[in-house]
Amino acid sequence: MNNLFARSCPCCGKSISFSERLIILNREVLACKFCARCLKPNFKIMLFNMFWFSMSVSWFIKSHTSLGYVWALCAAVFAATVVLPALDLLFSLEEETFDELN
Image 1: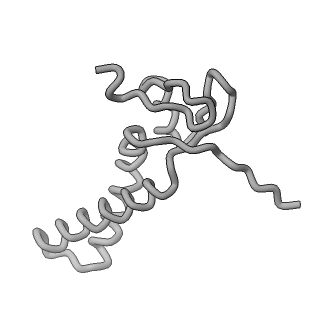
Image 2: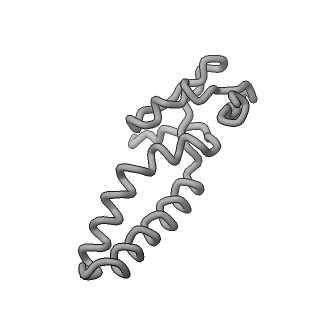
């Protein structure tokens, strides 16, 4: 069961356990304990999850309540910001790149 939730570091390939990735819930940067590289959830997967989850929530609210499109969109964005960090724990990681402004 432990291997089911373990993901590997994209830099060194070593396994990062689910309990070590819980820091992602606070939207903090995760550091690999083996190579000390900063990691974050995969950006493309995060966008895909945000799209389908927001669309599903807004469709459900619009079809099952009398709320308008604006309220359904607001509820979908709120639900996505609350639930998606937990969903990001289940998917792969990528190295964090820090862009300098200078």
